[in-house]
Image (cartoon, rainbow, N blue to C red; front, side, top):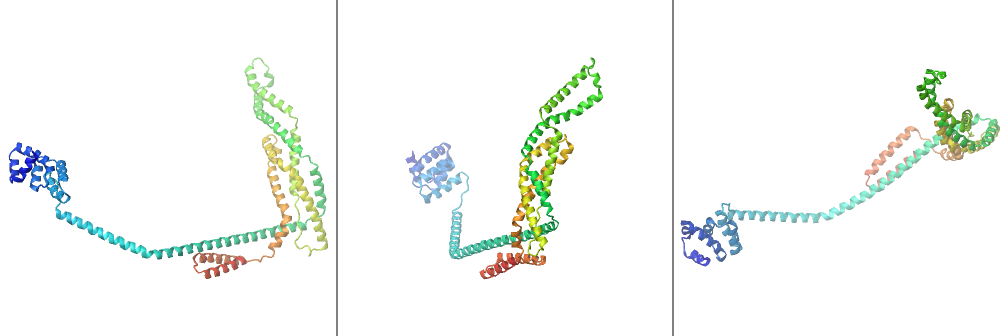
Length: 438
């Protein structure tokens, strides 16, 4: 049937009218045309439109066109197929125009890309030179910052030395005033106090604190029960407690009586007298205050210009300072007990108000004594060395100090923006001179 239809297509010019004249012939012709399409090397637009307008589907038509046609002929065969199915067909002129536009745009982009590549190639050398220059600037900036930080540290150290010099001058002046009021008889009392201090049994401090720590809970229990017992006895006559009709009162009194008895038994077991313990606390406090009252004396720096009496006083002061240092060394045995003493004092709070009011400041006084001990031990050793270093430093007025500070700040700004090595060296020399003056 396909070969017959193929022969008919070539021999019958009015095939379209013949197929459309009868429905049965149209359907049979369409089916035969669909089967014949793969076997027909060439089809006219009339043949395709005739077959597709009848019942040839889009998929069948495209499959037939792809199978039977070469690339140039496919578009010619495809347009009637699209028109038969009511789809818009792009004219050949529009396709050519669009293709030419795309080609022109592609050529423009290609030329632009070539110009960009040429521009990048020409600027590569300039870019590398700029990068090298930036690297040199960054290295110079790092060096300048390092120099600035070093000079700032030096300025801070010089300022600290000047402050330290002023502090030691004030301390030396006050020490010399104390030296003028010093009497050699103070050495005798200091030696007497040292002998009594070394005779102290510091182990007694630990044992007394242990006993007080055991004594405190029972004493606190009695203190808490004293109020309820007093109120109960004021409200009820003790002589009525044994009456047969006061059983509820006895049941109320029994727990209080039991707790009081237990606390009293605990206090009986502890062999300590609270008055004696309070006296010991007061004695330790007096010892700490006495140690704190021993202040070393410092003679003037220029001993050669002193009179004979003052030189003899210097010798007595040196001996007194040695005794004071021995007192400080002997008093260090009390320092390890400061924490335990503070805890015991807080545990005894409310039992002995008078003793507690004295003892609450004990830890602060001991800590203050330790600080003073450290300062006074170091002061006599380094006073002369510090004064030897700082007395030769020039004294700069406050107004000149402000001018120097402004000059240093201005030089720092100039160094950050300076490019020439010669100018930088000049600024650094000026900065060094200002720092030396400062």
